[in-house]
Image (tube, rainbow, N blue to C red):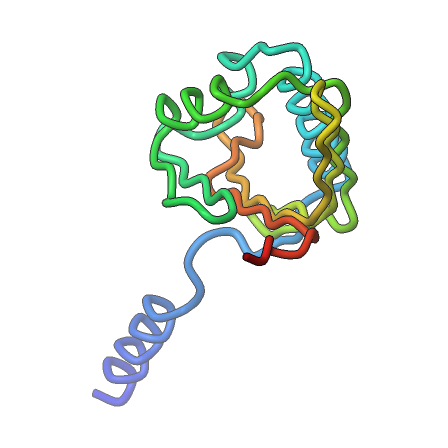
Length: 151
């Protein structure tokens, strides 16, 4: 009887244990995420909004500053498409890390628009590794470091 109870408790403990893969991501994963970030910035500058949007999961959430959340790849593509022409855009990763199938990139960005307007700030992307090895963005938030305009 004690063996049965012990076995039952072991099964319960295993069932309540961590779910998923707790291993840290590899350096090759970090390199792939950094390359994906570089591709994204190139796609935005060259107005290849379909390719930029393809970096997002189908059900991704995009959270631009001072606006409502944008939900889904198609809506994110529409948001990117409406951007004014950009002459220079960089995104620099400060940290890339993760565990299992989830990773993140924390960094800063600088944007210069053709009109001469500019912006700089910070961002955080959460990414999920797909079966094909790509790291798609599932959540993306960025905030400007510029002060909010006053009246």
